[in-house]
Length: 173
Image (cartoon, rainbow, N blue to C red; front, top):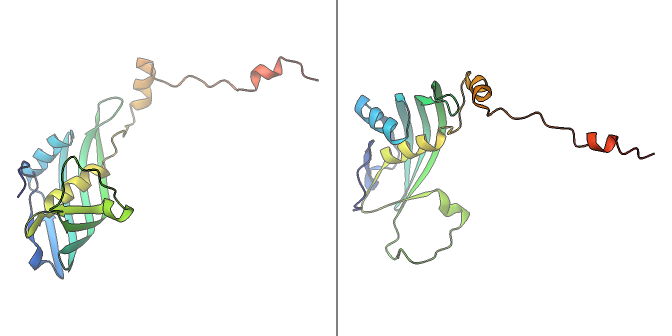
C-alpha cells in the first residue's frame, strides 16, 4: 500500500466485488468539514455520488453522478458564494505499474490520462469522488458584489480605446 495520508472521504472497494455493483457515497458532516478545509471552501452542505461499477479483468470502470452543495468565497469580494455542483463521472481504476521508477520519463497516451492507478486488490472510490469534486469547483467564481468591489479597489477594466481612433486623425484621403 501507499504511504500517502488517508483521504477525508475514504471508501475502499474490493476489485473482486465490483461487477454489476452500485456504490453510493454520502459524505457525513465530519468528512464534509475536512474536505471543505482541504479545498479552501467555506463549507460543504452535502456531497453524494452514485456510481455503477463494472469489472474487466483488473480494470474497474465507475460511471454515475455526483452532486454537492458548497459555499466558497467570491474570488473578488471574499463574500460567501453558494454553488451547486451536478457532474457526471466516468472513472477507470487500473492496477499501478510495478515497473515505475520516479526518475523515469514516460509517455502517456490520451487514453491513459483518465486512469486512476490502485495498488493491491482494492481502490479508494471515495477519494476519487473527492478529487472529482475539487475539479468541478470554479476557482474564479464571483458573486453579485464583485463588480462593486473591483471599482472600489481599482481593479475595474479600463475602457478600451478603439484601435482605429488614431488613424482617423491621419487624414488619409
